[in-house]
Image (tube, rainbow, N blue to C red):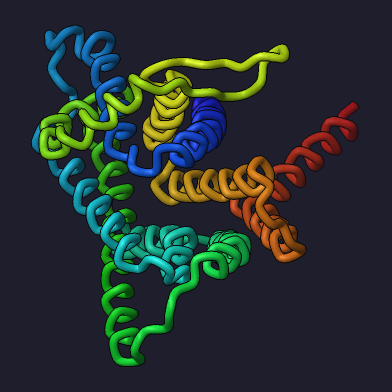
Amino acid sequence: MRPAFAIGLVFLGCCSNVVFLELLVRDFPGCGNIVTFAQFLFIAVEGFIFQANFGKKSPSIPISHIIIRIVMTYLYVSIFNFFLIFCNGMQPFKLSLFQGSLIANMILGIIILKKRYTPLKYASISMVSLGIFICTYMSAKQVAADTSSAKEDGLFAFLRWLLGIAMLSFALIMSARMGIFQETLYKQYGKYPKEALFYNHCLPLPGFLLLAGDIYNHAVLFSQSVFFFFPKFGGTVQTTFFPPPLLKTRYVCIRGVFTLTTECTSLTVTLVVTLRKFVSLIISIIYFRNPFTAWHWFGMAVVFVGTLMYTEVWNSARGLLHREKRVEKKE
């Protein structure tokens, strides 16, 4: 039940967090730093009290390995953020991140962990990637049409494209390598999702000192604002300074992801996280009334079939049917 529970946390927490975050970013476009800092601080304080027992409990996994994991995360996030800025308007690059992570994880799993997958697994990953690409590409076409800019010089556009490919490749490889590194750590030292959650959010906190000015300015801005969320009995739910639902849903999301890493392979975790992003996209389209075409429906169907193929639900159903028939024969 733990993997199913973790997957439920991922989808419930992450998808609802995306809605809260999008509502906030629409009014405060530059609030990314303070949101990230608040989330890291919230999880670090909770872990310091309940996991580290106010610093009295030593980590089960060596700190050196945890620091390596954090450095890898920092490199990936830094390259990813710069990639999004650099490739602004180059939507196909951004979309490649959705389906490319699955392929990259599978390739590194074969190279590093010497894994072998069934033809059904290869086909399912390809179908999920294709379906997500179709949905995100059709949504991005509308964004690109609304924010189109002047065409660039041919040579400059080509060089920019090459550099974008290099950054994208590095980001995908680093993301897949992080997942495999995490998987090997749990095999060697045991499963400690709460501990990993705490140290991965506590140790990077000093890095936010570099963003102290921006965080302080937005804290002042938030303290002067009132946030309105979903209607409730004819009124509105409102909070001041910073929306607690954003932190709570983020904690549920991250908690689910770290629990899932201890229960499943890195490829399965990547698949779940990728599907979560896909579901978040669909929720965003429906909730914020963005265009939803026949291509979106087709992409959703392809993702659904690919997911069923990956979980081998048909084989499980067939095995259950055979067991029932054997029981009937015995009776």
